[in-house]
Length: 147
Image (cartoon, rainbow, N blue to C red; front, side, top):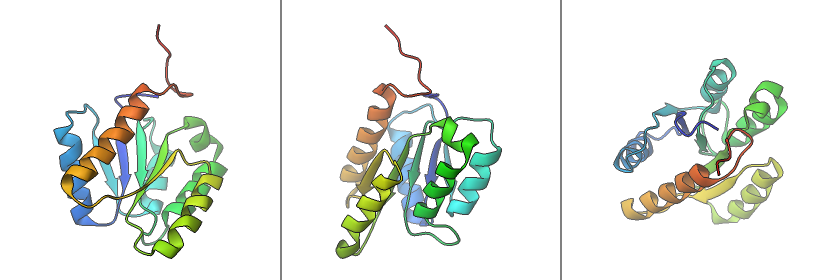
């Protein structure tokens, strides 16, 4: 895993994009952030880029192709699956009754995390810091173990 590869955020809400971008900037990360409004746009990018992104942060509800469909398509594609990009749902699921069903289904798709977006800038920053620090320190098929 390239620690310096881009962070992919698939998010159709402009305000959420701005918040994520600002927080990642404040964390002082060397990673660029690439935003996509739909799963389809992200899938096209992932299928054609030679880059191996550091992390995918994906909303669930989006136009054209939602986050569930995107993850299924990645799993079905040998090239994308072999990139072994950490895939984390970062979503503001509004209906609590759907949440457990979505979490269960997401893990059947072999995601590496499911986070409900916190409210408040400090809480969102804490979540993003936690996710990023975990993947910076985690051994992974694309990482080179040291020591």
